[in-house]
Length: 322
Image (tube, rainbow, N blue to C red; front, side):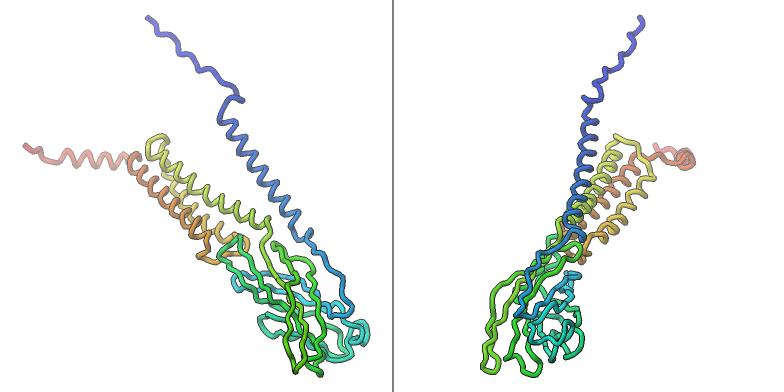
C-alpha cells in the first residue's frame, strides 16, 4: 500500500507570524530611540542653548561668566570672565577705567585676582572655579559650589572701599547644563568697615541628550554578551552546528568592549560605577560564552580524516588482552 503523500503545513500568514511582530517591534524601538536622541540633542544642543541674562546693575561691576568646559576628574569648571560694565565714576571712557581696580573671585584654582589698569582696555580673563562632585557617578554626576563671590575695590584704597559686584551667566558649554543663582550675602570686616558681598550657587550637570547617549552605549554593551552566550549555548546543546570561525568573532567582542567603554562621553575614569555594575560583567559574559563555545567545539567538532586514520592504526597495533 502506497503511503499518503506528506501534507505541507498550512501557512499562518505574515501578520500572524510572531517573528514578524518581533522584528517590527525591534525596528520601532530603534526608530523611537533614534528620534528621541535627535530631539534631545536639538533641544539641548549647543546651538539651542541660551540663558536668561538679567539686566546689568549700573551701580555695580557686572561680570559676565561664560562657561567653557567642565572637568569632572579635577572638579573644575573653566569660565571666561568679561567685565561687562562698571559704575560710571570708575570709567575713563567706554573701554578703560580711571584708576587701578582689583577683583578677587572665590573659589578659584590659581590666582584669584583680576587687575584692571588705569587707562588700559578692560581684559577678558579665563579662570577655573573649584567645585564639588564625583565623576564616578557618570553619567549622573553633578558638580556644585555655594560660595562663589567676588570682592572688587580700588587697588589704592583696599578692600574696605569695596565695590558691589554682579555675576551673570552667559551661554552654556556643550553637553552640560550650568545654573548660577544668588544664595545669600556675606559681611566680612576690613579695617573696621563691614563689606556686603553677594554669594552665588554654581552647579553643573550633564544634558539629558548626553545621559541618553551614554545609556544607549551601555545597552549595546549588554547586548554583546547576550548574543555570544546565545550562540555558544545553542552550539553546545546541539541546536546549531559548530563553526570554528565564530571563536574569532567572540574574541573580537572582547576588544570591542574596551573600544565602546572608551567612547563614553565625558570619559569616566576606570573604577566608576558603570565598570563595576556593567563593563566588568560584560567581559565576564563574553569570556564565559567563549569558553562554552570552545567546549561545544570540542564536543561536536569533527576531527581531521588523517587524525582518525592514525587513531585507527594505533588501535589495530595494540595486542589483544585476554
